[in-house]
Image 1 (cartoon, helix red, strand yellow):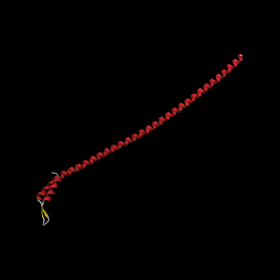
Image 2 (cartoon, rainbow, N blue to C red):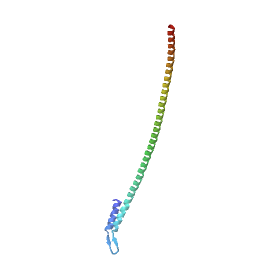
Image 3 (cartoon, helix red, strand yellow):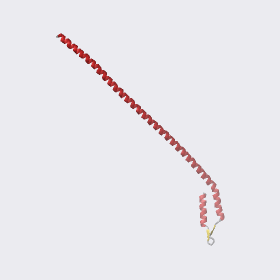
Image 4 (spheres, rainbow, N blue to C red):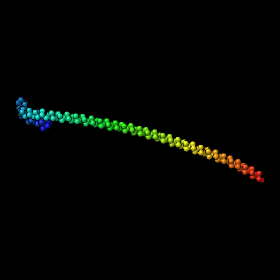
Length: 145
């Protein structure tokens, strides 16, 4: 029988005890109450052992939960740092790619400009040669007449 059940029995026996109205006292079977108290004493060490075990088990579970929570927090912080670093790397890579593209566009523009200038220069020289040739042809024709 558990301690609480024994205590309930004691309360019930006290409630059912015969009252002596003149002296405002009750008659209770002393031997019966002492037997119940002895039962409580016998049950108490086992109940205390269980309570201590529960207390220690609670501490152990809380310690494990705190340790697991710390692990989760540490893992989340590491992941956060990793994501920030990856983000920084992505930003730097994008900036570097933009620089390369800008440089390539600039080089292409310069090459195009230089090509146009070179072609214009060649065509100008050819034009001068053709004009000189036309002059020569005009002179040759005039000389024939």
